[in-house]
Amino acid sequence: MFRKCKLIRLINGSVKEAELQLQNRKNGIDGEGTIYQIQDVILPELKTLLQSVNDGTFFEIPPQNRYLVSYAYIIKSWGWNLQKASILGGKIARLGNYMKKL
Image (tube, rainbow, N blue to C red; front, side, top):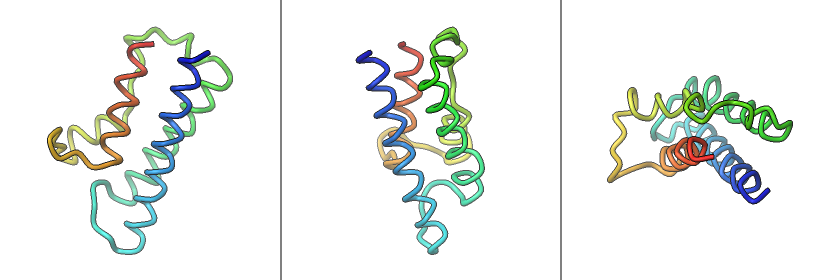
C-alpha cells in the first residue's frame, strides 16, 4: 500500500508541475517542453498512468515493460541535463525510475 501511495504522490506532483509548465508556455514563458509535448503527450500519459494505478492494472505490467514516453521526450528532445534538470524533468525522471523499481 505504501508503494502505491508513493506512486500516486509522484504522479500527482508531476501532473501539477506539468499543468503549471503548460500554463507558462501558453503565457509565453520559455522552459522545457512545448505546448504540444506537455498538453498532448505528457499530461494524458500521466493521467492514464494514474488511472491504471488506481484500478490496479499498473501492477500487472512487468517492471521491465514500465516506461514513460514523457521520459523519452526529456532525454531525447529536450537535451536534458541531469545537473541542470528542470522541475518537470526531474519529477518525470524520478517517477520513471520509481515505476521500474516496483
